[in-house]
Image (cartoon, rainbow, N blue to C red; front, side, top):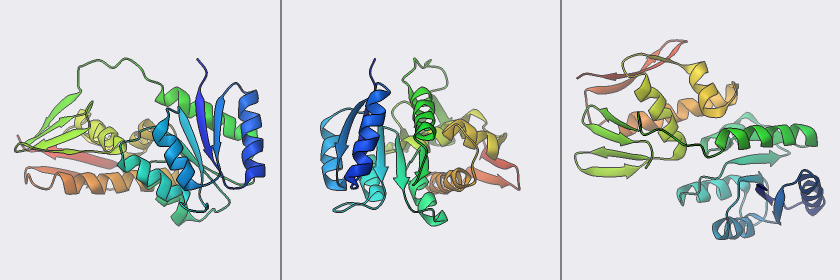
Length: 229
């Protein structure tokens, strides 16, 4: 089945080159020239993957990605940028980027990244086992990305749900950080590790209402979801 990709790139020469290359690789491609039109297009149609430039008029790539994630849009995306600052990469991963590629880039490298992400995020039948977890006084439903405490339910992001599920599967045991990063992102990377730590911090805040539940650091090893039964 033909995969669909949304490219949001204000440099039209670069955009048209990407469209031609991806179409030659049998992808269906839609090109938008600014973040605002990219937002409207993403909201109207289904895409298997998005490629966002960072610096764009009307709405930058990170704001675009953050807005879509806040609206519940789960399609994976790659940031395409001329910037290579550590802070920008961390911001990108924090809003849920699957990967990051800097200009100028090799199109074959981009294609490899796209195919890896599409294989990893392909919808697969998921067994019902281990989809719902009790965490002290919390109930966590991975499928619905819901965390419930004393009858009050809040929605987690996709990445928060993935990290919390890994912690639950290792409840009261060490979850090794490098292995967790690889399972969540499909590769080991310094910036991805920093992003993973951000999600750990967010989950700590979400679980703070129950004093019997803690996410503990294990120095230079990983984390433990500690739950006193």
